[in-house]
Image (cartoon, rainbow, N blue to C red; front, side, top):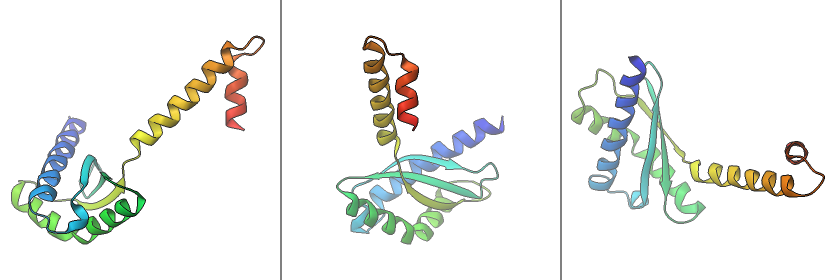
Length: 131
C-alpha cells in the first residue's frame, strides 16, 4: 500500500514540476529541461528529480545549476498546488537511462557476436568484458 502511495506521489511531483518549469520558471537555463522521473524516499523527506536537457554537456550543467537555484521556488509552488503534509527537499540529477540502455545493448551485441563464432561460448565473451 505504501509503495503505491509513493509511486503516486512520484508521478504527481513529476507532472507538477514539469508544469512549473514550463510555465512559471523564468530562468533561461531551464528552457530545454525535461523531467524524466522523480524518486522519493519512503518518508517523503527527499526527492531526486531525474532530468534531461537539450544540447550538450554545458547546457545540462547550466540546467542543473538553474534547477538547484530554483529549488526554493519550486518547493514553495509545489506546496501551494499539492495537498501534501510535507514537500520533499529536491535534488536534481541527470537521467542516464538512455546511456545505460545503449551500454546494455552494446554488451548484448558483443555476447551475441561472440556466441556465433565457432569454438567460443557466451561465457567467454562475458568474462572478457568483465575484466
